[in-house]
Image (tube, rainbow, N blue to C red; front, side):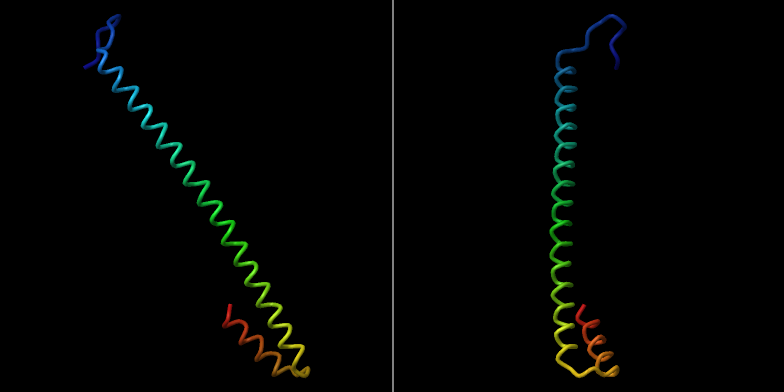
Length: 85
């Protein structure tokens, strides 16, 4: 029940409200920290994926250069690389 106009709330109600505000603030901070951590992890994973794709591209180029220039062999190597991706 709300206090009558001009009357103070009970001290316990004020403490309860302060506690609730503090809990809400901590939850917001926890969510921000979790979001920042997730963003950093996503960046790390993208960098790892980029490195893997680059390594596969180099590997494919090496294989192509080792073979004679032949459209069928070239297509087969590309198909093999596609399955590795």
